[in-house]
Structure formats: structure tokens, C-alpha cells
Image (cartoon, rainbow, N blue to C red; front, side):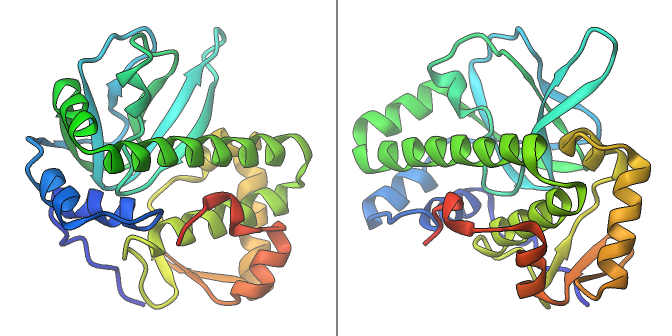
Amino acid sequence: MSAPSQSLAEHDRLIAKLESIGTLTLEERAAIKALPLRVRQIAEDTDIVRDGDTPTESCLLVEGFLCRYKMLPDGGRQILAIHTAGDIPDLQSLQLKVMDHSLGSLTPCKVAFISHAALHDITRAHPGVMALFWRDTLIDAAIFREWLTGVGRRSAHQRIAHLICEIHLRLKVVGLTDDDGFELPITQAELADALGLSTVHVNRVLQDLRRDGLIASRGKFLAVTDWRRLEQAGGFDPRYLHVR
């Protein structure tokens, strides 16, 4: 098992993501490549934007994993989404000026910040780019509906199998899988926060999936060894991701 390449430049990462859900003209690709970016390396467990903030820029995830989350009064955390390379998870702050949740890193991340002014300029000048941003926002809502269904109605085994399928496919369409697997440096406690389970329950299910020959792991690399059976175990239907 070998790790997938992380070599795509920041602009190309965004282009790869948008072209996984639609098409870009040469002019639109050039406009994206001209976007001014402020690139930063972010340590794990670091907030990028917090609930109640009024940001003036959005972040493009280039490498690593981010999460959208809410904190409860008792200190508990509910992870609402896991974001993969190519996502702009706080794109909605273009229109919703006050954040109603927080965005933080699950792993060390490379992110590129894009000013709201630059995003407004490119969407005004290139309606095709605006349409793909809008499509991406709608897909984000579709993913949220699947997560809500999972927490409300799926068993623990189904939730974890479904999430592995989702992350695998989202990484695959932007070229970040290799040998039918991918890097997943997310802790079992973080998976528990995302899936409404205990850490012990997550550990037990992962052991079951390995024992049944659906997945294998080496360090932080997770291999899907039987995709069809993993799909069946999670009741996974990829239509909600609307990838090309």
C-alpha cells in the first residue's frame, strides 16, 4: 500500500474538485488560477473560524482533513461534516456573514485563504464558476442529509461503512486514493464525534470490518479490500455526491 500524491498546487486542487462535479471552460480555469491565495500550514486541532465570527475570507482545503462542528454547553462536540481536499467548507460565509458553527482541523492541513472580495469578483465575471460553487453548496447539503439519516436510522456498522465509502469516493475523484485506499489520519474519538457513537463502539466496528475482509489498515493508510461488500454493509448509494 502506498500513499497517494499530495503534489497538486493550490489552484489546481480547486479546479480538480470543481471538475469532479461539473465542467470549466479554459477561461474559467484561467480565472481560478489567477485567484490571489494566502497559503498557510495549520496544525491539527486548530480552529480556522469559530462560531460567531464574521470572516472576510474563505478557506480552500489543499491537504488534510477539516471538520465543521458545534460545541454543546456540557463541552461535548458534534462533528457535522468532514471536509477533504478541494473543499471550501466556509463558502457560505460569502452570504451568511456570521458563522453559526466552527471549522477546525482534524489533521495537519495546508489551506489557502481566498478573500470574499476576490470570490465575489470571480463569480460576477464568470457565471459558470458561480454555478459550480452553487452546485458544490447543494452537494454539501445533500451530504448533510445523508449524515442526518445515518445518525438517526443507521446502525453503528452501517454508519462507519457508509462514511468510509463516502470519504474514499470524495478523495478518489480528486486523485487522492491509491491502491484502492487512502490516508485516514482521523482518530477513533473524532469518528465517534461525527457518528454519534462511543470510541469503544467505533473501535469494535472497525475490528469487525477488518475481520470480515472489507477493509485493511497499515498505520494511517486504510485500504478498501472489498468495495462491493463495504457498499452493501453501509447501504451506500453514491448518487448524493453527484460526482461526474
